Amino acid sequence: MADQKDTDEDGDRTGAQAAGAAAAPGDRDDYRAPRGARTMLRSTARGATLTYEAAADWIVLRKDEKPTAEVFYVRYFLQGGGGEGGDHSDNRPLTFVFNGGPGASSVYLHFGAVGPRRVAFQDRGIPPAAPDVLVDNDETWLQFTDLVFIDPVGTGFSRMIPEKKKPTEKPAPGEGKKEVEYWGLKRDLESIGEFARKFLSRFHRWDSAVYIAGESYGGFRVAKLARMLQEKYGVGLAGAILISPALEFTLLDGSDYDTMMWLDTFPTMAGAAAFHGRARKLQDGEDIRAYARRAGQFALTELLPVLAAGDLGGVEKKNEVLDTAADFIGLPRELVRAKNGRVRIEWFVKNLLRDRGLHLGLYDASMTVKDPYPDRDEWTGPDPTLHMAERVFASAANTQIRRSIGLDTDRDYDLLSDEVNQNWKVDTRKHALDSQVGATDDLRYGMSLNPAMKVYLTHGVYDLVTPFFAADRISNLMKLDEDRRKMLTVKHHLGGHMFYTWPESRRELFEDIRGLYGSAG
Image (cartoon, rainbow, N blue to C red; front, side, top):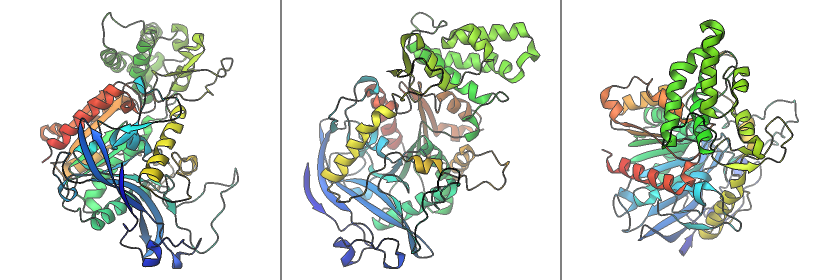
């Protein structure tokens, strides 16, 4: 429900800019920021009416006092009663939310779990039939925190501001990557730090309890920003929430000569096999999460030595372990032997239910889709988790931002940019052999820097892309003392990468996060 609309949110704008004057293309000296919108909206959550100011606008990033990028955001500030943590927006907690990719907008957390309205997914996160429907979100975090959803540069409505010279055309294949300043690990983090500092100043929220929440590569961002925001931008954090994070890059790409990626994905494969009735080690009445944990213990104690040593421990012992591994994940023993226990996730989703003409989702291996190419050996079909949900999130974003909030722009809202992803660079690397790219050390540093900061780390048990077992291992390798350990919660939910699209998992997450905010300080 919209009560009013207003377009004068950005204090940096001149009168002509607020009136909607367009920027001259490629002319930074005559730059005019795009025009945002704001309105008052109402929705319900758990029987209570929430009245909140909703705005869609941009914050301009600058370098050497010249505008370089426009970062788009949607914010929700609760007005009056109806929520927890204070009646007015100026004394409530404030949470910055973003997704990952790199190249993903914030639409997934915005309309899947956190925002005041969400997509009406069916059970187990199955997308609804068209037309897509937005419903009031009983589990919106707006009940206990104001919300700011950030779209990094190149996603959503966020864009670079070109210089006067003609923008570089996208390179043809083979001509190298497109160079964009903000499409790099370090510069991306700096842009979010700059955004957060400008936002807190614009809305006089420096005295709010600040939280950050991110999913996937966004979880990587959260871990890095747990240090950077506090150390370099003066933004103290009350909490950091990592949803399906990728924390260490070295764990995402396995080979014949390493072990950890194969170890981390194994329990997820076991859980998926149990879900689809293919697990041969599942005990009567055993919960799937318990089964996946038991598979993880087997992987640590028995499979890991085989992955690390091959035939050094003896062929007979190796084959015995590989046969047990095959039984855990529901694949033929001779195939797991042939692969020496190294089963790629793409091969697994293609072949577990191949006899039924189905392949699984990489991001949620409990979901299936009819294989369009059953005669092909390689995985080439759509991912039922990601590809089938894109239209739903696109509809949600454009409906909420354009119609409900009233933003008038001819830009296309980029949910997930392949261009950003393919041109991403690790701009922290000092040498070609510098391959240890990760965020766990930064998270540990941030927890040491701020002993009061609470951390919530969570995954979906059917996510093969960022598997839950990696978080279990990493959290036990952080060498936290007793006091820091009390500040860290590690918990996993039924579902995949976006486990919050499962109704019960979304409710569990909501209760956990509400408790996190309630216990802060």
